[in-house]
Image 1 (cartoon, rainbow, N blue to C red):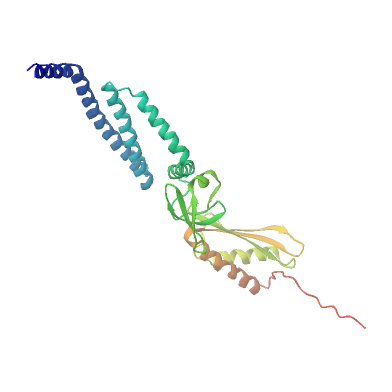
Image 2 (cartoon, rainbow, N blue to C red; image 1 turned 90 degrees about the vertical axis):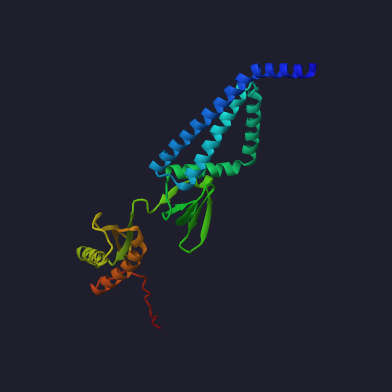
Length: 271
C-alpha cells in the first residue's frame, strides 16, 4: 500500500513539474509545424512566380523544410529542459565532417544552385565552356550535359562550370553570320559590295533588323577583304550559313569577280 501511495505521489509531483513543460513543448511543436507549412507554401508560390527550375525548386523546398524542422526540434527540446547546446555542437561537428568528406561534391552542388538561380543558360542553348562547345541537354544539381555538333555527350561538373567563362551563343534569340570574303585587287569595290549584298538577300531567313552589312575591312598582299554580316534566328543559323557560302562563290563567278588563290607559274629554262 505504501508503494502505490509513493508511486501516486511521484506521479503527481512529475505531473506538476514536467506537465507544463510537456504541454508547452507540444504547443510549440504544433504551432511550429503549422508555421513551417505556411512558410513552405509561400516559398513554393514564390518559386512558381519566379519560374524557377523544377529540379532546384524541389530541392530547395525539401532543404528548407528539413532545416526548419531541425530548428523546431531543437526548440522543443529546450522547452522540455534538455540542454540543446551539446546537441547543436554534435550536429555542427557531424556537418563539418560530412562537408570535408564531400568537398568536391559540395562545390559542384553549389555551382549547380548558382546556375539554376542566375540562369546563364537554359536547355537547348548553345554554349561554350570549359573548352567544350555544344547544346545544353540537361542541367542537374551536380553536372551539366552538353551535346556537341559531333553528337558526343559531354558532362561538365557544375563547380568548374560556374567558376569559368561561359559563352552563350543563343541567349539573344538570334545570331550573326560573319564571313570574310577576299577578292582580287582588280575587282571594283562598289560592284563587289552589290554582289555580296545581293547574295545575302537571296537567303530567305536573313533578318532585316539588324540590317545586313557588307564593308571593305582589309587590304592584304594579294587580296582585298570584305566582311559579310547578317542576322538569323537561332534555328536558321547553320542552314543559312551553309547556303550563303556557295551563293557568294557562284555570284562572284557570274559577275567576273575573282577570288584570289595561289598560282603556280612555270618558268622554262633556255638552254
